[in-house]
Length: 125
Image 1 (spheres, rainbow, N blue to C red):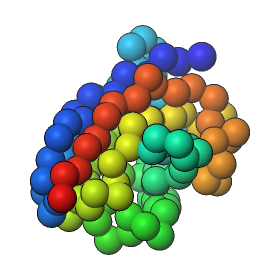
Image 2: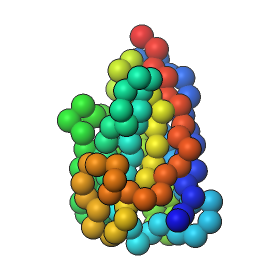
Image 3: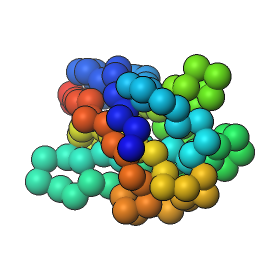
């Protein structure tokens, strides 16, 4: 399995923006769908967004649609999550994940087989 590393988390005020990045510590994930999930304290891990291999397919959770954008740069072997208009309820640990196949387009964690350690995002009110 590919080991993934997230970066870019931090503390931001409500209404602010952050950009998360994810890259494999070795190998490549350019041939697989990729996704972002998040987990708040005491809650289950929830789907945030995903992107297909070419970037032609993107899906988002309703709670982030219109505010968050998933993108990828296959040449740089990097996945991004641009988060705008952040709200306190976006506070969570954010994880990137690699799909089991190039066509893993669902929102369930079991469709993804490699995960990062997570990066904390805290939005203050």
